[in-house]
Amino acid sequence: MRNQFINSAAIALFLVFGSQNAAAEFDHKHELWNSIVSRYVSADGSTSVVDYKTLKEDAREPLTKYLDTLASVPESKFNSWTKRQRLAFLINAYNAWTIKLIVDNYPIKSIKDIGGFLSSPWKQKIVQLFGDKRSLDWIEHEKIRPTFNEPRIHFALVCASKGCPGLRSEAFTPDKLDQQLEGSTKRFLADGSRNSFNLQKKELNLSSLFKWYKDDFVKARGSVEKFVLPYMTKAGQAANTEHFIISYKDYDWSLNENHNSSR
Image (tube, rainbow, N blue to C red):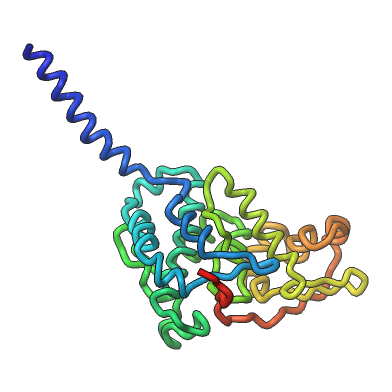
């Protein structure tokens, strides 16, 4: 009888603490974030727009809940994950905190309207991660770029502006990460309003992203030309060893807002 009681108690404890441990396991599918972007992000040609107005009215609680799940991850746990799990986590965290920053300050015309000369939106310590207040710049420049050597992240991290790559209407996940990074890169470079080329004149007119982060593209592929041309033209593989004259387009910092939402 005593053994039966002990076994019953052990089972009860397992059900209680086991379920708590299961609940504590991080969702690498990022379902909470996926449910937000799938509802409030929509395609606009080769980019995307966000319904910030409705998101602010209807989804602040789910957004806060998702950010809380990110903040609850200890750095030691994060460091135990695979490379893809860590990168997907950081990309989603960057994008979700960017959206939170816009929602908290909405209505605005541009993300650059937030903060001042000495306190740009990217330097404000608004990100709660690993037990401390961080900035968006910290995620990008101290956690992602030095660690992953992945230039395609520049088409995954968003700045809530028309000139930046479009926010995906799905969360980045470890199992689809390479496909998603590749898709975001192709979509951005296929947008002739932001990136164009002339093979005969050997001219490239590119987004300013390629000027700001030139070193990342050179490090990965040897030159900006070698990175972009295979994405921009079928002839790129043959032409990407030739020298092109590169110019850069002005960046459109106006808010990537959906003004036509019917919600």
